[in-house]
Amino acid sequence: MNTGPDFSFETRIGGRVAGVDEVGRGPLAGPVTAAAVVLDPATIPEGLNDSKKLSARKRTALLEQLLERAEVSLGWASVEEIDAINIRNATFLAMRRALEGLAPVGHALIDGNALPPELPCPATTIVKGDGRSLSIAAASIVAKVGRDKHMMALSRQFPGYGWERNAGYPTADHKQALLDLGVTPHHRRSFKPVHNILYQGKSVSS
Image 1 (cartoon, rainbow, N blue to C red):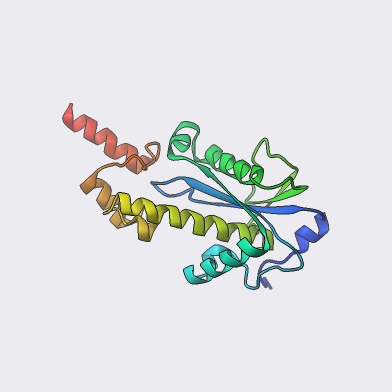
Image 2 (tube, rainbow, N blue to C red):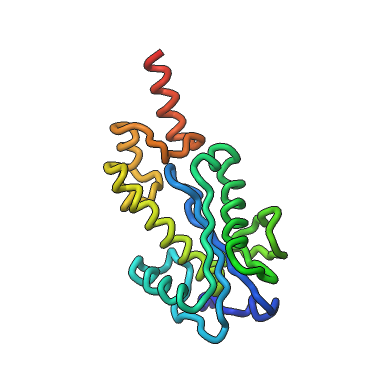
């Protein structure tokens, strides 16, 4: 029976182990965000879990504890980078930047099944790691809260797209706003719904 994430991966590896997770691969707008977290085994916050299984209030409360008790780093890849090198490589870039923002670690635990290249330390991938490793769960919370705050700020600059609610994901109201209001500088032009609107707009005016 799955009882949630634990510290067994970190304990077996030993030393300074960072959990790494990302958020924002699927949205039509905004950056992709990764976090790297090194927990202190003596003071791990209670209730760490996959960020998708936690309420926004719980995530925010846990983030405050993590900032006090753990080493935390955020890494970003911009919309321009996503469009230039594709979302997969941009995600790897954000993960590498998150790890590089920490003091040197001995090993990284990466959520998923793909190992980013050129990491600053050895690493292991863990499928569904945010539900299995406490360090990855912590990283999932840090990345989620960080990106949501960023999209909330962008929503005030570009109202009408619902980013304060949908965080840039392709909800029905977001896609309708794209049709009604057009494409912003924060939209990913390489993503099909955005590309199609730009292409149709050009074809209509030509």
